[in-house]
Length: 402
Image (cartoon, rainbow, N blue to C red; front, side, top):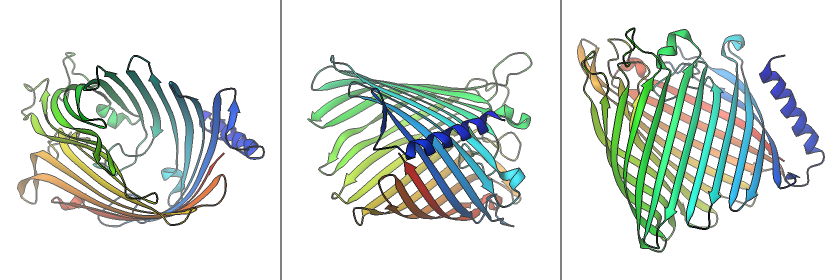
């Protein structure tokens, strides 16, 4: 029996057993044990995200998992282990897959005004890494992050953050995309009210591809980045809390002598706010603008080695009753490529726009069970016709947390 199947059987058995005895969260000493399982039926109108010859499919997904939490207020540690068994009605043997994921987080608070947050995640998946890609392919992704905060006084605080991600593709033809990305930043927070701070930050980063040249020199695509930013963190309005940060980022390639290419410089954005209009109505805004490594540039048809991606999302949640909640989500993604590429007898810079609309309704069915309905309409428009597509998804989900 494969390892993934063993994990699946173990988790389902654990969840089934604990469901018979659970009275709230299960505890092992100080540790809270939280088994869960999600079962989802999804109708996808365009599983290959093609402009023409759209292929629909019914997709069944079973996602069992187990969460462990140490809820100490000064040292909260959590671990989540799960898998997702996905089955397609169209070409089941080719399209079906099993995903596995592990997440770990730790939040430490020290009496000297020092906070430390650590997070890590591992994914074994076939989901595309970015919206640039439409094909599914097996890959592994590892994320790590550390965030240190230190309060010097009631007026000044410091923050140091580190983030890294590694991409490893199983296919030999895609191994040239295997890489590691890292970023380190320093921020100074200046409080101008008890709950609001102005921030100034500086950061550096690097992208290093695994594939090297025969003479062991760096890959053409290896690069370094530097960024300056400023913004506001905390209570932005009487009903809105979060972070708004803008800046300027520069990308410089290590090996420009072998490939004639321009470095990049652009405006960046980080947005994460929550507005509580009332106890029943909440608006969440998220946004990001940054450089993204291109996965399709290894040809004359796609010469850009990176692109600038802008993502904006608005989620409006409305609690209709104590058991029923509705949500409307609007999303907009824009991708801008710096290099011209041939199309239709002329050279143009590729530009994609994705508009997403989601309507969801969920109902609490009892102490452990939640049922939800979700409809998503997704449309990618591009100045290069072959990259356009439309996609409609209708899903029903049952979620049990014990």
